[in-house]
Image (cartoon, rainbow, N blue to C red; front, side):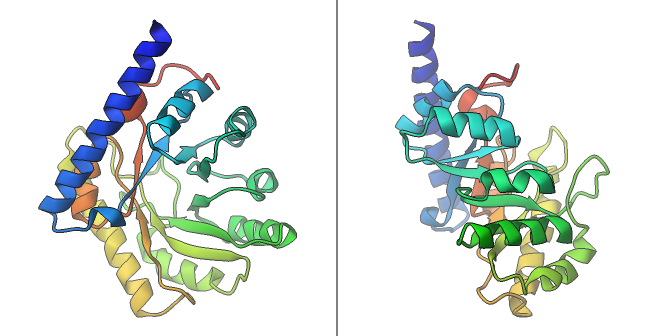
Length: 240
C-alpha cells in the first residue's frame, strides 16, 4: 500500500508540475518546448526514481557521485539521462565521465581540465554548465559573476568539453521573488558570453529554478528546471 501510494503521489506531482510549467510558460510568452524538467533525486530511493521515470521523466540529477553510481547500477534497465548537479571533486570525474549527460557545476579551471582529460579518454565530448554564485552567498560554490566571462574564455579552448550554458542556485529565502535578481544576472551573463562569441557554439542552457522558485526562473529564461521536493516530497535520509 505504501509503495502504491508513493507511486500515485509521484505521478500526480509530476502531472501537476508539468501543467504549471505549461501555464507559466504561456504567461511568460515562452515556448514550453524550450524548458526541460530535471528531477533532483538525491537521497531518494531507486524505486522513487523508477516511478518518476515511468511517469515520463527521463532526466535525473544527483549531487553525490557514489549515490549516482549506485542508482545507475540498480536502474541500468532504464534509459535514464543522468546529470550531475553537486560539487564535483576532480578525483571523482573518472567515475561519471563515461555516461554523464551534463555536469551542471563546473566552477574551476582544474575541474574543467579534468573533465576534458577524462572525456578524451572516453572518446566523447562532455557537456558542462558553468556554475555562477549569483547571490554571492559564502555557503555556495560557483564562480563570481564578475569572473564568469573570463572563466568561460579561459576554458573555451578545451576540445573535449562543450560549454552548454550556465547554472545558478537562487538565494535561500521563503520569497520566490527574491530569486529574480540572481536569475536575471545569469541570463545577462549568458547573453554577454554569446555576444562576445566566447564559445564555438552559442550557450543555450540556463539551469536555474527549483521547487519553490521555478515560476520566476521560467519568467527569466530558464531552460532547465531542477525540481526535487515538488516531485518526491521532503527529504529525510539518504536511501539509494
